[in-house]
Image (cartoon, rainbow over all chains, first blue to last red; front, top):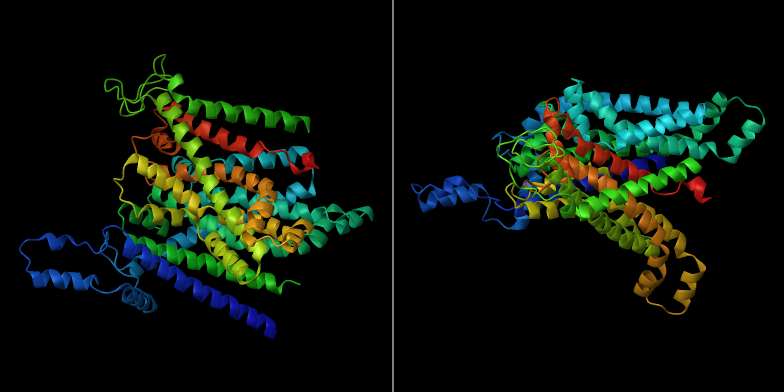
Length: 286
Length: 268
C-alpha cells in the first residue's frame, strides 16, 4: 500500500516536473522567436521616447532572461497564460471556452475507436481465418495510409461528425497495437496447453489471454489519447469547429506564439495526466 | 507465403518506379512546375496535360512528378536524421545505463507523450509564413527529423541493452577499448538491422505528416510542389475528380512501404 502511494507520488512529481520543463520550453520559444516584443505602436512617430520606453517596459523587453522565465511561470501559477496577440484576448479564457468542445469530441472519438479496435482484435483472434485477418489488415492498412487531413476532408464531404473522424484516425493504429499484444499472448505455452485440454476458444480468450494482456493494453490509453488529440487539429481546422485544435491552427497561421505554446503545454499536460492514470492502473494490475 | 512474396515484389517495383518518377522528373515532362497556362485554368486531362491543370493553369502531372521528388527524397532524409539520433542516443543509453539511461529514456517518453502535430505546428510557426519555399521544405523535414526519433530510440535502446552483457562487448572492455570505440566499432555495427528497420518505418510516417502539414498550409510552401500541397486540390473534388491522383499515389506509396519487408513468419 505504502509502496503504491510512493509510486503515485513519484509519478505526480514527474508530472509537475514535466509541467515546469514544458513551461520553460514554451517561454523560450516565445522569447527567442523572431519578432518577439515588436509592437507596431513603437513605429508611431507621434509617441515620445518615454511613451516608447513605457511600451517596451510593458512587454518586459528590458528584463533579463531569468526574470522573464520567473514572470512567465509566476503568471502560469496564477492562471495567467498571457494574452493572445491575434485574438487580443486572455489565453486562459480562450482555452476555457474551447476546451469543452474538444474534450467532448476527442472523448467520443476515443471511446468509439477503442470499442471498434477491441471488437476487431477479439474477432480476428477468436475466429482465426485468413479472410478475416486479411480484411482487417487491409482495411486498417488503407486507413493508416491516409493523411489525417485527408480523413478530415472526407468527413467534411460526407458531413460526418468530428468525433467519427477522430475515431477513424485513431482506430487503425490502435487496432494494430491491440492485435499485436493479444496475438503475442495467444502464442504463449499456457494458451497452447489450454487448447490441448480442449478449453473453448472464447474461454481461452476471455479467461486466459485478456487478463495477461491487460497491463500492456492499459499502456495504450496514453498513446491513443495522444493520437486522438493530434487528429483534432486538422479535423477542427478544416470543418471550422470551435475547438482547441482549430485555435492551435489559427495561432500557427497568425504566429501567435503565446497562444500556441500555451495550447501545446495544455495538451501535453492532458496527455501526461492520462499516462499517469494508465501507469497507476497498470501498477495495480496483479 | 508465395502471395506475400509476390506482393512484396510488386510493392518494391512500385516504389522504385515512383522514386524513378521523382528523380528523373525532367525526363517525364517538358513543362516547368511553376509555368502557368493562364488561358486553360482547371483544364480536364488531355494529351498535352495528362492530369489537367490547376486553378492557376499549372500542369498537374508536372507538379505531381516534381512533388514526388520533394516528398520521396526528403522524407528519407528526415528519417535518416531521426534514425541517427535514435541510434546514437539509444546505443549510449543501452550501453552506459545508470542516470544517463534514465534521462535519455525519460526525455524519449516525454517526447512520445506529445502529439506530434501540435509540436510540429508550434515549431513551424516560429518561422514567418512568407518564408521562401526552399527554406519551408528544409524547415519542415528538419523538424520532422529532429522530433521523430523517440519511438525508434526505444527499439534501439532495447537492442543495445541486450548487447551490453554480450561476450564480444565484455571482451572489448577487457582489452581496454575506450567507450567511444566500443560504441562506434562494436555496438553501432551490430545495431545496423534495427537501425535500417526503424529508418524504413519512419519514411511513410514522415510522408503522411508532411502531407497533413502542407494541407493545413504549414508545410512546404507554394510554388514548390509536394504531395501534401497537391492534396489541397482535393478540396474542389466534385468538379475535378482527377485531382485525386496525388492522393492515390501517396496512399499506394505508403501501403508499399508497409509491405516491402519480409514478415516475421517468413524470416523464421
